[in-house]
Amino acid sequence: MKDPIIQLSSLTKSYGKTKAVDALDLKIYPGEIFGLLGPNGAGKTTSILMMLGLTEPSSGKAYVCGHDATRNPIAVKRKVGYLPDNVGFYPEMTALENLSFIAELNGLPRAQARIKSQEMLQTVGLANEMHKKTAAFSRGMKQRLGLAEVLIKAPAVAILDEPTLGIDPKGVDEFLELIKQLSKEQNLTVLLSSHHLHQVQRVCDRVGIFVGGKLLVEGSIDSLANNLQQQEGVSTVIMLENSGDSKRFETALQELPGLRTLSLEGDSIKLKSEKDNTADAVRILVQHGAAIVSVQRNDYALDQIYHTYFENSKL
Image 1 (cartoon, one colour):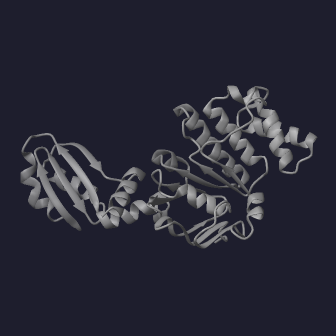
Image 2 (cartoon, helix red, strand yellow):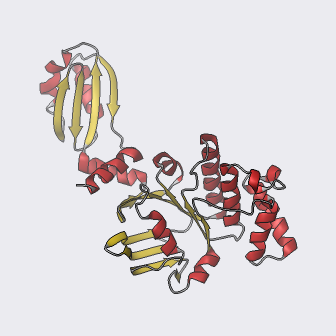
């Protein structure tokens, strides 16, 4: 396995007696899109600021691109592009002028900076607006320009903090697809911080659920679903055609392997099992003459995974 490009070890930030980030351990690998998922105030932005060397941890270490972010923040900034949740530009300058200025600040000669900026505006879908003043830009256009600003320095890592906040649904779709495309084409590592579950689910290879300053769990959505399935069991609801018909199938269904609970409510049969035995349950019912209307299995989408861990964290 590749060495992690971001490695956080017991990273902690305290403000008085309050721990904004509590012993965060996390590894992110080159080329992946990692989603840091949690509610507002969970400590996501504080964690990002420590990774960038913009705030000093109370304890622990943050290594980014092989550099200690606290001891050598300038080296980290050379390798990392950062898009905050509210990016600002010079309103009386055009998109091309703003981006060319940033490119020059990052060491590109003026002529090269202008050419590179034009190419980058094409990449993020702003070629037709490059000569428009940013004062007239929508929120979505500003976020695209912000992404171009992140990418103009050809970073190894892009950190995006709530990048779709305030963008309309169509703009969100386009922005997320752009992130996926750029990560794949440029082998760009992306850390996406968000509280929007469905957006994280669409683009991220792995996610970490962050609540109250603590990373509760991390992994691919499939692995988190499998782990939760083992803990919580697999739930299946089978609807029958005839009211009150479910009672006569109870004895046969009790023989299902790994069955935890079985409940009958009117036309519905609700099962919870150690593993997925939906097919076996349907087979038994058909053999016993049941008229099945519908079958619904709980597959643990990210929203269910998140809410389960979130609720458990409050116990």
